[in-house]
Image 1 (cartoon, rainbow, N blue to C red):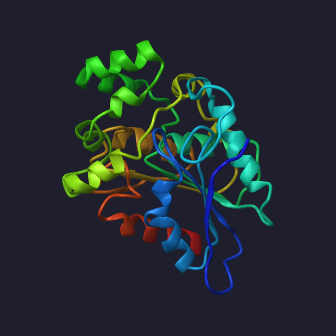
Image 2: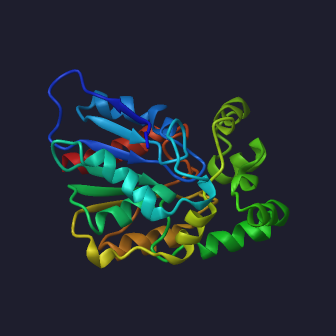
Length: 258
């Protein structure tokens, strides 16, 4: 099975640890290549972004509906096994859960979670979406396809972006969104992270105006890994695409340098 991996390399000697970026639900490696991959490469890091199976330009074994989080972890492992040194894993949303599960059993230098699936699971998110948008929520459950939840630019803006994003930019990003595995969603509910099995430094970051995960949920995840979250005011769920994305990137760079 062929996976899409987008790689950006620094012009000069790279930093010791490569970076591997893992996207969230409905997205692909493209979301990192908009800003983060070239920016981190410019700052000396070999930067890879993988499209998980069935996402972006990656192939899939069978229907995407039935992909599991454990298989997404395997996808990440297939990328890291070809690296010369253990990486830092950076995961967004569902990709944050993939990173957490990866770190339970694989070597790494550290992990960064951006607006990540909480250690307590996504029941709260599920109830909030069901309450706000009962018809798309029902369609998603009947069809075993999460796309109805983000099926329009308006739904995508509410879920991922703040008002600072132009309508044109939201529409352009919405065109790149796609279906997501229903079984992976169930895993997000019930196959929870085990922070006690992770023994590398962790940076947990969240967005104050996130419509998917609340600041309280982000804080609980940070505490589970022995720290406090770095929160960004006026920012939505897609922290790597929001107009103030550079604040997020620079915070990660400072953490990496430290």
